[in-house]
Amino acid sequence: MIEFAQVSKSFDGQRAVDALDLVIPQGELAVLIGTSGSGKSTTLKMINRLVEYDSGTLRFAGEDVRRFRPETLRRRMGYAIQSIGLFPHWTVEQNIATVPQLLNWPKPRIRDRVTELLTLLHLEPEQYRRRFPHQLSGGQQQRVGVARALAADPDVLLMDEPFGALDPVTRAALQDELRRIHALSGKTIVLVTHDIDEALGLAQRIVLLERGRIVQQGSPLELLTRPASDAVRDFIGRSDIGIKLLALERVAARARPGEAATGDPIAAGATLREALSAFVTRGVERLPVIDAQGRPVGTLHFADLLPPAP
Amino acid sequence: MSRRPQGWPKTLRRWACTPLSCSLAALLALTLGMPALRPLFAALFPELDRPIYQQDSFAALVLAHVSLVAASSAVAIVAGSVLGLAVCRPAGRAFRPLLESLLAMSQSFPPVAVLAVAAPLIGFGEAPALIALVLYGVLPIAQGTLAGLDAVPAATREVAQGLGFAPWQALWRVELPLAAPVILAGVRTSVVINIGTATIASTVGAKTLGSPIIVGLSGFNTAYVIQGAVLVALLAICCDQLFERLQRRLSAWQPTEGAAAETAPPPSAGH
Ligand SMILES: Nc1ncnc2c1ncn2[C@@H]1O[C@H](COP(=O)(O)OP(=O)(O)O)[C@@H](O)[C@H]1O
Ligand SMILES: [Mg+2]
Image (tube, rainbow over all chains, first blue to last red; front, side, top):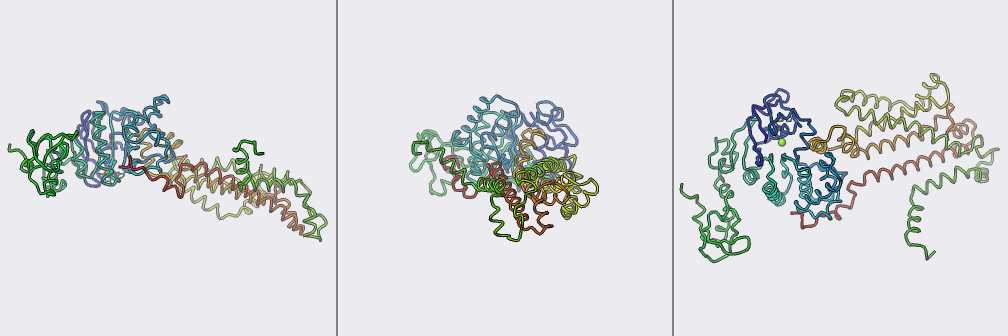
């Protein structure tokens, strides 16, 4: 869907992106991560031509992005950023309707789409559609920002630290939302973050950038188990790689089915990291596991947290 | 009375009590009813033979004053906002420092000086007055336009571009509406100042509410000065209040003080 081949971009003689090779297939949720100034935003903005690249080729849907009119290209890609940038003089409804309106959708279709998106993002349509941005909390504003990016059903969603300004609880909720939307819609999503936990939790592919170059790319599991260098290990957080590995897997995958145990149960959908926490705080070695309906499905032993021997 | 629908006497009362309608009523009453105040002025200034200015009717003076201000302000609004917009576009950005120093410079010129220079060149009458008023009117409007456009958050601009607005669409639908309250504040300043400056225009022969003031000053007739000055002041107040209403309407989307509590998010969707 998006292919970078030897793409470079300099600002005032300084390489911001340096001979980047990256392929993001259709439907993938790719996360660009790196320290501040590593070229994440520049990489993202080259995709929708907010920044024009200097050399190499950058293709979208098989065609050089320069073959598209910038407005046409951008209307096919949702765009959401950290500071949200909702238009303060427009209501929630008008904000979400931005791109459909630019595309001249008929009014009833726009209205239905707004209702659908507000519902999707858990904002009660009749309660919120006529509010102005300043009448919303930060989390609600970002929901509207995401809804606006999704409005015209774009092929690609570009997000630049979309949850960066939110408190941890709101951020976790919106990350869940994004995971759900991705699973539901199968959209190609490119997300920029500097938060390794966000990247590990959301990404199918993590692309770690440093000074405009890719240091390593791969699945969260690959990055955790086979970091390419000490620099990568440091970035991930050397001391808690094990904890982060546990966060990637669910209790259901390690529980012993059919076995019963007593005590407070843990949900099958919880991560092994949460299970570890439960073992330690409760001082037990076995946890009964229940499914989403509350039915017992097995038992997790403390020893099950260790990775199965190869 | 009691059988009337409850709604409209209330609206009527609300209208009758606004500062704007009060000032408008005072302006209208004084414009038409100044001759009726003859006993008052005669009592205040017993030494004057003619205590009420009568060379022109006050209605004609107000009308002439308003037309002069309206014409010059219309030109100033167009010129000022176009200038301000032009130097904020990529093509005109190079000229911004030039415009800013021109604006700063012209601010230090008193309007009387402009009139004094313009009158011998163009002749007496409305033309030099119009030129001086336009020059002074452009200033706050261009500044307001610059300040208004500058105040549009960079993130809002970037998102507008990133969502696929063409540059002129972003300008027209996002930047200008957001800048509008500040631009309008500039227009308000410009027009209100022009109402005052138009008074001086009568020194070069334009007929305005300045005429009784100038005649009064040169003929030691304080009553004329007061009559002209009070009407100019009322006109300026009306205009200012009109703009205040307009501004409030244009910035209806902005958070107002005390609105914060009302907008506290319901816990349901705030997670
Ligand atoms: N518009 C610009 N003009 C000049 N330099 C820029 C511009 N945008 C980015 N840069 C520079 O390019 C480098 C990469 O920036 P960016 O892609 O924004 O990094 P990140 O998003 O990873 O923090 C930085 O050194 C930054 O200073
Ligand atoms: Mg950035």
